[in-house]
Length: 220
Ligand code: E4P
Image (cartoon, helix red, strand yellow):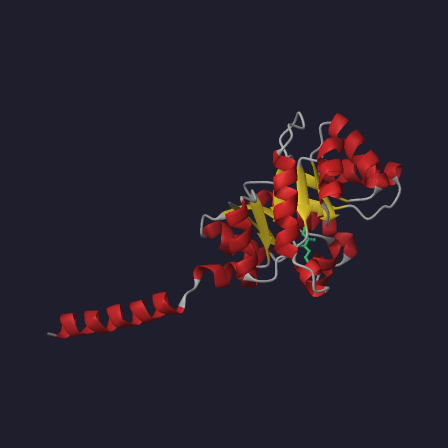
């Protein structure tokens, strides 16, 4: 499984990249505003992220109509060769994805919840499909169950181009583990989840006892 960070915070991106585990980033203007940015600076910020990350960086369009999404997508794609255009799953989004694909621009189809949406996203030309997990859990549905259905359905077909599943709306480490067991290609996670994935109390306890033994050996 590849790990993407779902963030706009440069320090988090640099830290994950330094661990050698970062394969991409998904971000949007809301995350950037939450990180203290302004809308006017968003494209420059995306450029900074693209320079750091050795992999795809998804930047989101905000238009609701196909021509507008395509225009925004072309502007975003011009920022860097590894910029992927994030487009919402909706009829106008499918139409924009078809056009962007014809122009050689990769699309990450976001806000995807169902098997039918995922099949249509892949068919329209999306390079990445992002099923959301946590938002299903929020409404007492089984997000991981829906993810499994999407992965299974997509694996039945050859879409004529590579399609990778990005597990999105990840809130807990167990979402990532379950997604990996289902064979999801990618999980995009907040930095707080990535940190929880690497830590374990038994590792901490083992380290403590190793250090205390080492002190004794040194002082013997
Ligand atoms: C990523 O592409 C999605 O926008 C993100 O994972 C959504 O997460 P949320 O449901 O926690 O907002």
